Image 1 (cartoon, rainbow, N blue to C red):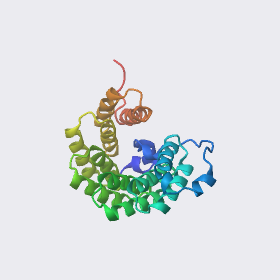
Image 2 (cartoon, one colour; image 1 turned 90 degrees about the vertical axis):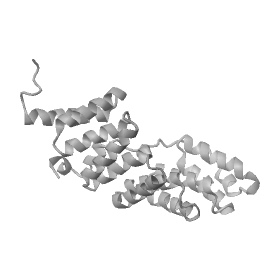
Image 3 (cartoon, rainbow, N blue to C red; image 1 turned 30 degrees about the horizontal axis):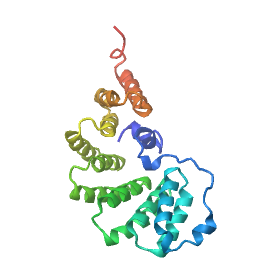
Image 4 (cartoon, rainbow, N blue to C red; image 1 turned 180 degrees about the vertical axis):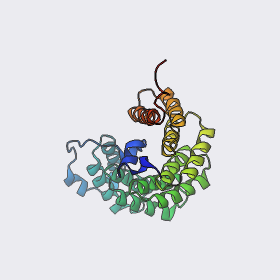
Length: 239
């Protein structure tokens, strides 16, 4: 590869747009009576399911998990409970636990596209990029124009050093949606890795037309400009 890949191990996390599953969740005060959770029965199922959803929405993921796990004692294979439980684990960065939930869901519904896609994200979060790529391919077999699967597969391919394949993913995604922000930005990243900084700036500019205030894209553009300036000091001088 080149110097950009060798700066430091977390360079990718600084450069790529993070998936919402990686965002920090603020811990909220406890609002649940845990004794009542332990006493839940089948008559309370819908109410406690809705409580779990609400807790997750406000960031009380540990308590949402407590609700969902109790519900699974009543209905061990309940798809919506398992799916939401996996999401709560993912938001807490408990990626292995999330994958375990998704695998259980896929045992009974192997073609559930959102489950496969979310499992791909968790595999990516664990750095298991080859396994993530396999999952993204499964999504794309079911839905060949799945934008987020194409874009995320491109990221996983890049992190695996497969830059040409990643570029093909981004190109296909941009044929479907030329204004897909993350894809434009991540294609700029690819051009940085290839030392094609002028093209990188072009794609960062396209992304910034869509969201002019995205800090990561602004930083990436500035990085590309600084590299370009070093290669050709006269190129970026004012007239």
